[in-house]
Amino acid sequence: MRILITNDDGINAPGLKVLERIAADIAGPTGEVWTVAPAFEQSGVGHAISYTHPMMIAELGPRRFAAEGSPADCVLAGLYDVMAANPPDLVLSGVNRGNNAAENVLYSGTIGAAIEAALQGLPAIALSQFLGPANAHLPDPFEAAATHGTALVRRLLDHGNWEAGDYRLFYNVNFPPVPADKVTGTEVTVQGYRRDTSFSVEPHLSPSGRRFLWIKGGAQQIATLPGSDAAANLAGAISVTPMRADLTAHDHVAALARRLQDAAP
Image (cartoon, rainbow, N blue to C red; front, top):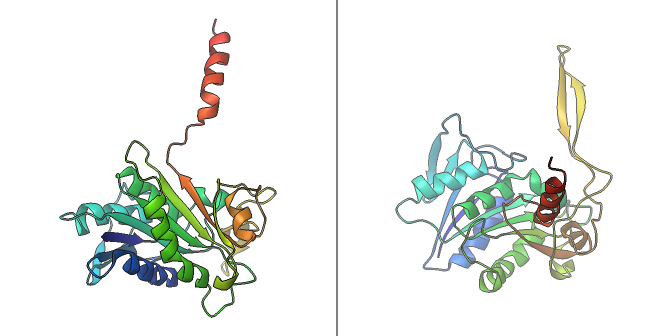
């Protein structure tokens, strides 16, 4: 198996090293792992692409490249430049430092890479490590992902839905904020929503008196509804959420069409 890996924390991020080991285990001795990751941190860029300006790409070593672009850019660079002669069989994105559960999904460059891979017709899995009081200060905060990641990816590859099609599925995996031996299992979940918290801005003055705004994240240790991703994670479980890039609210299409038809002059 040929695997392309990327992330949004940057080419030197510790979570990428965890993903390299997971990918190497999945690829096996006869497989290949190729890395195309952002040269600098790209957290929070979502599914952005560098449409209006070029990006530099540099080969750092065998099958290892850094691109001055977003995670989605890195997937495109991998497919159409680095691995153009022999494309990957699978794209893995992560392991993100911090969770990509609930509303974080919509901001995440880690998820953006998986979306782009799925749009390009490739199987894709995004992996993130939830951080909290029980694991943030461990010698290895990524312990849960490192210990359970390979087996989880294998189970998904063997038992997930990988049918091709428009807006094909990809999978969002979040490892809980606990040590590896405290993981309670794996749950298939929906995307949750953290109530009463959100991203915001915090103003600061520079030494020269100029006013700047920092984007500020909301509280993360807030459980979402039962059966959703962050709720499972905070209870100690790995969450697996099947996703697709189709943003249509399908449950409202028919009703809206009826109301608009009834309101027509």
